[in-house]
Length: 203
Image (cartoon, rainbow, N blue to C red; front, side, top):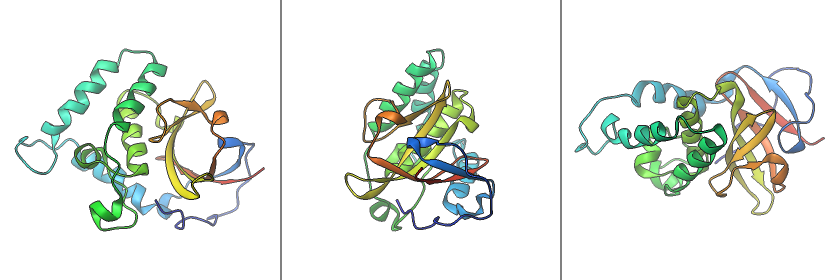
């Protein structure tokens, strides 16, 4: 996961009150700084519903039925339970570095790719994002968040979802779904969803 792609604002906007992890956040709407994210959105729409045979090496809708069946089993459950189950389901997949799997330092995989071969931190977050979207959670209430792990001193990515005004964190390194107030070792760098992105700065 690379954070170097985004360290400057694309235009002047007013800083917002304290947001994720107690940091201030500044909202922008031009997503062109995020080609990996835009590519993932496009590939998900184009590829994830492709029909195919389960004997194929490349994952297709036949392989995805297990994922869709799982989502169907939790669709009527309370939202808090859905979050826990989505986090658990995705976190059972293998962690695989982008360089090892795709020959690139930073590649944002879609569920079709992640569910078949695993992935790294942002791939876990992306699959959780699309899983919750399928269950009816509002896209504007979710963000992929790139953070600096101040314990390990490495970049990392998680999914944040606002429920009742509270940001909840779905993390491939943590079994539980936690309030951002209970996560003290992440410094947010930027976050993004399908309509906007935010840069985060200390208060």
